[in-house]
Length: 118
Image 1: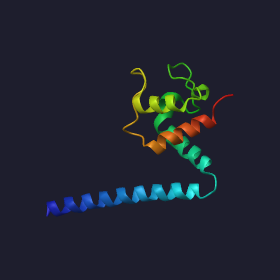
Image 2: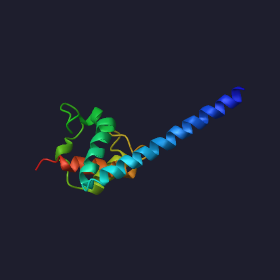
Image 3: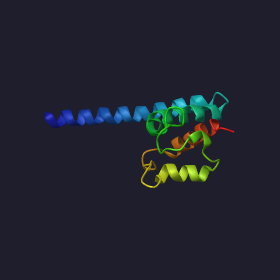
Image 4: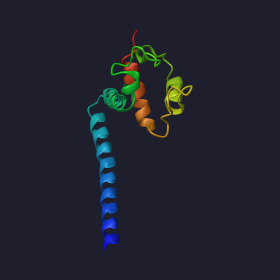
């Protein structure tokens, strides 16, 4: 009896995971269907930033009094940005390559680039 309950629970979790992935893909497709894919990327990047990055880098891309750089002034170098996010930096920033998808990293780049100071 316990074994059957475990399999049922596992099946429910698998179904929820599959539905979550499908919903995320549907939302992304709906955003891109608005004829403004760049805005959709900015919105996704902003959400990822708020969830994963803002606790160190600050809610407005800068965190006074810390060692984190002001991301509003981050150089216009996409390769450097992607490499830093994926691999981390000097034991001060953890690597996110195994946590964030390629799409999430690109969305972060578009979001941060859209907020760059001139």
